[in-house]
Length: 328
Image (cartoon, rainbow, N blue to C red):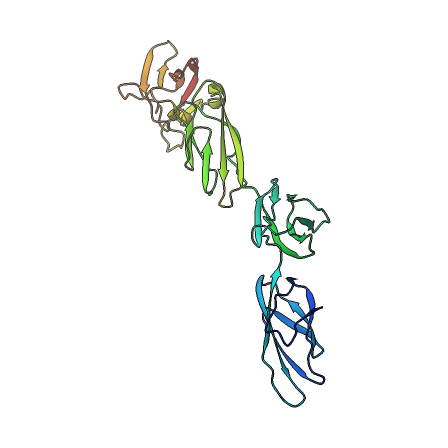
């Protein structure tokens, strides 16, 4: 117990630990009343000339003052003393610490004190840092060799990774393109060296092209996806070429439709009769009206079977040949 003599106007007391309870007292006349004033703490027990103070966590210099009132109502000169309230300083980074799924965080107490410190974490470990990838509360207590301690805590928030879906692997032929949309995020890094979204890609080689993207969301979390653009398979693309047109009668099949031929600018279509004579030739045809059963001069051709040759002018693909029937 530290004593403050009434004959002395003040003295330097031993320091106290923040959050601790300490007793202080004075000597005086018999039956005197002592009035205490405490800064930075609370009197939790008062025995007149002895008090017990619980110091708050406001680290620094604090003042104690006591005034003696004698039995005859004489008021003494206030006696003042000062002491340091000490505690380790530490900060583990804020109230909330955010990480991404599958990542870990090293929580560093960033502590300092006038004596060496030891640590106790919420799981009982005692390392200088704490590593975790789990969501929840993390706290640490740092204690000096003098017994003074402090503590800090934070909530670990684990943010989910971005989910990206570029769609199913596909095949593109000719000038066909596909829009790849990775969704709304902060940053994009495409294997095509583009950094925007969405992007448009086409068939760029005779081999399968693997296109990938890594995105970064607004929490700094990353996700990725990949799509494969396969080799153009012309035979598969034109596996179901219509073999009949019905001229007249308002039929929906009055014109020969080859929708996919629009992917091949410069394609050439030729129609021959059964004797091998060329009756129709067109370059870069309208995919929805490749042929309407007329000759090159506009003459309606009779009902019959005709031969077609479709040259896509695409890389090394062979011309497509077959028959088409004209019905009236």
